[in-house]
Length: 479
Ligand code: ADP
Image (tube, rainbow, N blue to C red; front, side, top):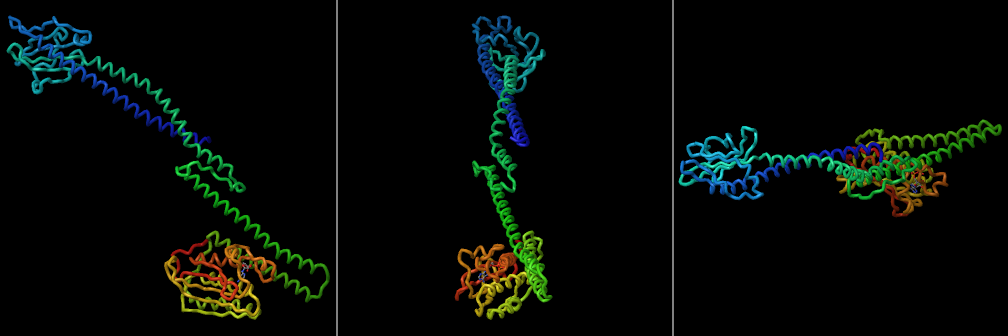
């Protein structure tokens, strides 16, 4: 177990022992107090019995003195009665009798108002010698004369017994705390065990070992839930690292081709003496490759900006018609070179609020692909329609580009939107670009709250479409 986890365990154990100690101490106090009250109650009942005995033994002698017959049997269990304190008062307060145990002390002086209110009146008092006594008073007639009889017993023995019990329990307390501390520490260690395993594993995880996962014993408890969250995080990190790796290797691979081409053209030019026109051709070919390279680096930069979330959109309102015509006019020359016809069909006049340059770039990529990947003398249709979307919660505009080319096979329809992904035939043909066009189209449209998709066109070929919300989504997301 690591040092910080040991600290957590010790802190938990201390808290546990502290709380347990507090509760135990309170329990000991209450138990001792209850024990004392119970003994005092027993003493009270013994006093009532004794009072009844005494009342039968008191008598007035001929000279008017009150006496107590001492000729009754005292059993061993009544040994306590030997400690009895007894005094008898006449109703006007004169002392009629005091036993030798009481001597010159008294059990409360003159009669109080409470004495006589109950059959047996119970109260406590402290004698002159400091002893506490439990006093029982009773008023009754003896040989026709009403007297107040008071008997008292010292509560010192029961006080001592309760204190002994209290001390005994206090002496046991440290052992109980030791056992509790030991058990608490074991339980805390067991509870923190999964956390310890997590930290050990987390220490060993590096960029190369992101496939490791934290074992989950119980997914329903807090630690299991935390392990699930961490595993989820690891999975996302692994995905991102994987994407980064493949992106880096794809970029290197794509950069190598034009660079190799520039190099070989340059080497050919350096090998022999040529006419100035031939050199101009060689330089022209090299510049062509350089501009391809620059274009790719620009696109990569845009993607990098988009992914880092630093790209700022410049939103404005513009008619979709104008945007489509603008995009078509950019690609028209290429289409005319191949004898292709671009047909435009716009349903209604719609105004869109978005970053015009990014949406235009997305559309140009789709029309450019349609031109590149369809045979000569075919038709390309660009349609604009408005539609209601229940999921997006507002009107949408759908711009579709349909061609009569080879189409996109079902299994590649998801993947063509990935960076650097190209179908096999376009890899080998001169028409193909570097496989970034659709990736950037998808990003631009999705960042405006829309979506892109592809299916088969009615007359064969592919139909790509983008759907965008007419009213902008509250916050444009940079994905
Ligand atoms: P590229 O620069 O290669 O055109 P894109 O990302 O625009 O990159 O397209 C990815 C791949 O999807 C292309 O290489 C091509 O194989 C395929 N593709 C795109 N548009 C079409 C289309 N209209 N018809 C057939 N294949 C297409």
